[in-house]
Image (tube, rainbow, N blue to C red; front, side):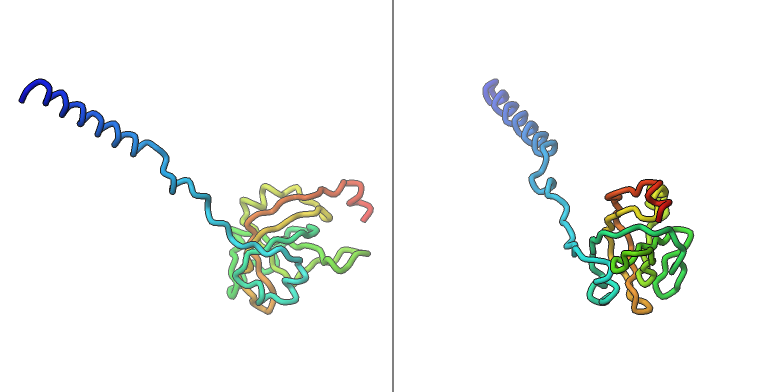
Length: 162
């Protein structure tokens, strides 16, 4: 082999190595695809309570008024959410305006880690919940909360007047 052939082969090898390195380090067009979003149904708590089977295995989003943390429905075997990992919340009924009545027909569960982030919730705070109805045991909707956002905090003195 002459010097020109060796240089040509070396050049081809170096170019090939450069292309391989570029191909393995360059971001893939398909790797950057956004995660597929789930269909979320915007609704109200009363719509869900009035027809729980319509929302079974569906992801819902609703606005509500926080009432209190609760153990209601925990450890019920037919729709098990263990009390060592979850806490329940109660929201107020949307159809009663002159006093507070919890919507106990809807069982709403948060993982304890999420609940700890919202430990400062007060009765009357406006919240938005996104979650999945995972059961209709007892003909009630049972909801796993995926996200909880505080929309409006009730003022402490406003809360005491209620």
